[in-house]
Length: 239
Image 1 (cartoon, rainbow, N blue to C red):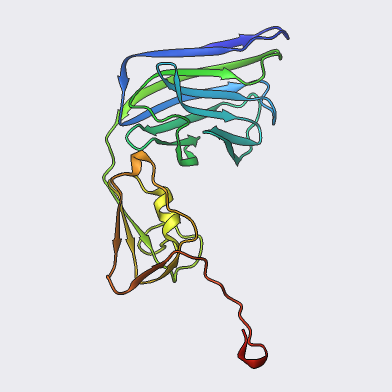
Image 2 (image 1 turned 30 degrees about the vertical axis):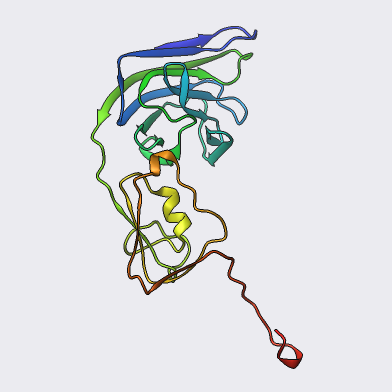
């Protein structure tokens, strides 16, 4: 499939695929893409929809991959004009999250959908700059159902170093970090230690099935405050 915009007047190049049957749960979407005018301010937009509701909104520029929720977030990258890339989007309508791979490299890991939906039935691909002559090529489009993954255990240890990923040997060091990546059905296993929570831990609708499990009732202590450190003793035993 080749889409070409041959004028400098306003207008977007676009391709749209309507599925005969809507897919829910874990869904995979893959395609090859090339854009002749890929720049830092000019790129391609990939939308996955349910009816007219945009569930997934990803944009690819020369220097980043951006995704849209109620705000815009991005991950730095380096992509070239006239180069062909294989893009794979793995969406989970049960959790309201999705991941994006470019040439089999994970660039977005379980980020929230722009709008949570029960199923997906439309793919829309188009350019972000609507007043520039350019050529975009999309081909080898694949859409498929994936098995729903098993639930997992995410580990938290107050004594762990920062930068963990929740695995048993490399746990997170805050409860908030673990909850942020947990999906419904997952267990957040909290090891003994002191945890300071200075703001509410909010769960989305799709996280309602998360279990927070303490390693022991006596060893896990959670405080609703910020831990103050750096005290020094002054005169008259005033700190």
